[in-house]
Image (cartoon, rainbow, N blue to C red; front, side, top):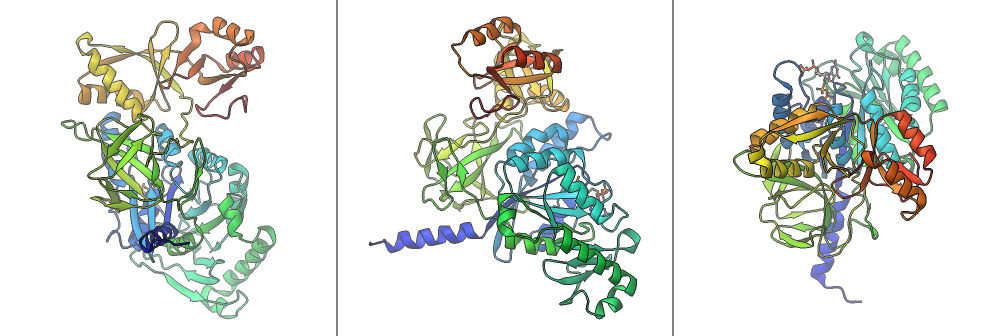
Amino acid sequence: MYLCPYLFIESMSLKREIERRRTFGIISHPDAGKTTLTEKLLLFGGAIQEAGAVKSNKIKKGATSDFMEIERQRGISVATSVLAFEYEGIKINILDTPGHKDFAEDTFRTLTAVDSVIVVIDVAKGVEEQTEKLVEVCRMRNIPMIVFINKLDREGKDAFELLDEIEQKLNLRVTPLSFPIGMGYDFKGIYNIWEKNVNLFSGDSRKNIEETIEIADVNHPDLETIISEKAANILREELELVYEVYPDFNRDEYLEGTLQPVFFGSALNNFGVRELLDCFVEIAPKPRPKESDTRLVRPEEKEFSGFVFKIHANMDPKHRDRLAFVKVVSGTFERNTAYLHVRNNKKLKFSSPNAFFAEKKQIVDVSYPGDIVGLHDTGNFKIGDTLTEGEEMRYKGIPSFSPEHFKYINNADPMKSKQLEKGIDQLMDEGVAQLFTLELNGRKVIGTVGALQFEVIQYRLEHEYGALCTYENLNVHKACWVDPKNPKSEEFADFKRVKSKFLAKDKRGQLVFFADSAFTLQMTQSKYPNVHLHFVSEFEKHSTVK
Ligand code: G4P
């Protein structure tokens, strides 16, 4: 078979670029140390020169009003949306995930664009609420996870107790790849099970590489002089238990999401971070194939395809500028090339696609699978949209979750109803909240994950669109997407008639049922067993009754 040399070289370089990419997210409960760890990883990659350079996207309470704080956070999170750097020939893309629970949905969407995650846990606090929720999403999708237990320089829980807690609360199967020697005041360092050496803790955060002492065997007498006889004996006993109780590390199981390696360290002191990074680049997955509605798409395929997982809009109120973040799934994305926007069936060309490097954006000519491209957009994109070279397929897997808070939204300035409509429309495309229209009277209802979003919407409608709105309370416990087994059945007709006051359509026209209490939900489910209700907008037809 004749293969054109140019095509051959092109496909080889695509393969090489895919092999060397690692795209991941760091998830944690706020304050566990995500920002600090991110910063230390960037320091190792040489992408930043000093600590304190990465801004925290945390919502700080107290200093300013909540919505001003959110605007500040929004500004920062454009800069930290993607932090890319090179480490030992590997191109690493870290996707930012807000830890604040009101922005959980942002994080869920970002998790559709990562190939693996690092979970950060505070040694003293153990497994916290946000970690549980986020890990559950990763577990459901079999995303490979590495756990980093942080703040070992402080007093915290016993290592075995923590490993137990992780197994039980997070439902993970763990295997430690490093183990702490002492803790808090007595913290001496870690034994690196993966590399088989001892790293001594100096407590000096300015040092980039801590003192690493190779010892082929923990029974070596040198260990006593290095960490004291008592500490050496405890470590030997603990390691014996580790080898007995926990499974050996197996990369395939890690990649399948059935085994999670655990590291210990102190991000603030830059301790244990290099070990984590070295192991990460070795074991973490390269860009993975992704399921579309028609087929499984592999990164190595020549034709470009990708999907929008995040939209940032109107950072500058004078310009309607939106930046759509596209994850490249297959092929190469090239500047000034026309791609099909599948939902609108329209070809679009991008003259200045952005790539991200540390906290800077720059225009790029070519991007590869695993990379994130920022596309300037005038209102074409919605979260979840697919771009291809012409193939009619849509990527799956950016569901909406049932919001937790609901309010009617009313127009407070009749002269500005167009502006209000446009504003609501665009904010919903960005994924700030969800809009529902009641079947009975056409009234509009906004549903959000956090209470904070109502303020954000009101503030942004006024400042970016010149529109005023008011809210009215609405008592809804859960919004459920309705999935009748037989849309023509008597049962479904009865459901629609009896529940007509509580039915609405989401933005995609899907039917949604507003249950006003957990009791109503339960009663409805038992009365209409063939009308399935889901808490997520994307579901396998009639699969689960939730
Ligand atoms: P987050 O992004 O997960 O919310 O956490 P972040 O990195 O901002 O860390 C939260 C707090 O924990 C920070 O302190 C940070 O300095 C501290 N921290 C992070 N890693 C370690 C560690 O290994 N050891 C110790 N002792 N502390 C750690 P802060 O006082 O809230 O903020 P700052 O004033 O230091 O920035």
